[in-house]
Length: 432
Image 1: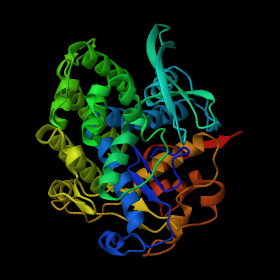
Image 2: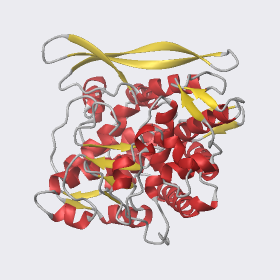
Image 3: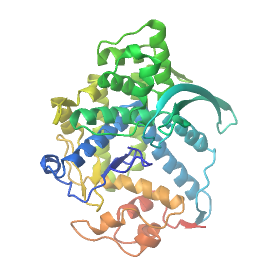
Image 4: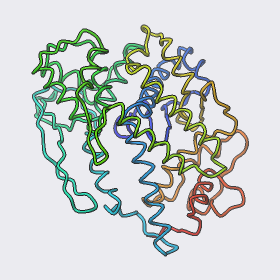
């Protein structure tokens, strides 16, 4: 889930590779967590959020999110370091100097709304033209998809459809195969509800709909791909017979053009994978981060192989109710898990089978989020409770709660201090 209104049971943070389950129960032992009748419902939520982790690594849209997060931090760091002033104003003012403002606007359009709506009676969709200006003053017109509906109080309403609805439908449908769970219509069931009226000939097989959603996530603009594919189905009279059939149809005529040429979805995926790996490599290039750097390269490379060798893997993760498939366990062994925590900040991590996990500290990526929080005016490090409960020793002090940027000047560096120092930010102080 995204960290919006969808975080009641748990959420996944793309780019930072962190999964949280909102329970006080101990979750470090996933085998026990899944088997215990008291915690099994929470494991179902873990499975839902783990799907979002896989989407982050194996789709164009997911890679774009990681790239945006890392580049945002790099841009902020560069501006602060090179402004010639040891103090920088917070909250940080987002500008379009490096297309940051434009990219934020595009991300909002591509993601759509993150709010939940319990019930909708779908009416129709409307395509709106939105102008986004880049750093050079050029205006790009982007389509935004507004869905009109009637709610359970018989009131008219609307929401913007985007990647949130598509990713949540995939996670919901697979979770529902594994363990029945009710979710609000929006965002979780929106693709199915729309298809039911727009193209009833498609049928109501959840895995076929999930295959369509997964294919649409192999696009810069998932909502546009979703609705364009529906219109093409109508025009060509396409009747799906399998999930593979749907996946192939959605991708077969999809291409992307830029100044460097034309890409198929898989070529675009490979191109973005290279950019993401380079961005993480730049951010974790210091020797102190080498184990994490190795881990990141491994899991993204494994994710790339997964998309190439099992393009429709997403619909094959559940064998039957209560049982995950052999394919799921293959992926689990190949990629492992992100860093995961519960409400009490107890954490866990399962590395891939084929990697030496000595020295890997997957929670370090959460520092990226905490640096952004400082730039936005925050004065408390969100890792404080986790660091205080570390099994080796409590590494916190008063600066964690009032001025985490000072940790970079200390002899013993905490995770925040490590990044603040190695990124060259020591001596920089936020002021209002």
